Length: 117
Image (cartoon, helix red, strand yellow):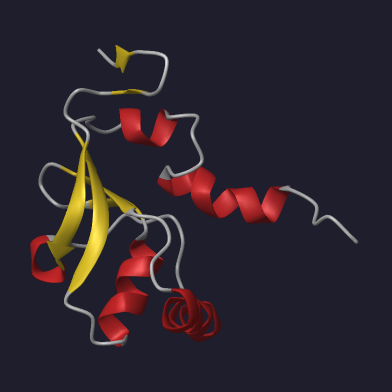
């Protein structure tokens, strides 16, 4: 059950930090393929800004959100990524309403219109 207070809400097992790439792995059932153009964009962003949001992995190290980020970091020769670990088990991670879940993370950009300035 998530712990709740006025500052933050999340599961007690939620732990973040830098993790060696060797300790995490892509989800073979990942819903989204990352083509060369997409991976180039991820790598370019990493080169310019660094990693600005962690990927989400389960306790076994399977990536639930951030497969493309993992692939981009690996292609750049990085050895570590910032991760958040969750103790939720499938199918619960896919049903979460927050935008860093695998399905919501990639759909967010495809379903929302861009703001024009």
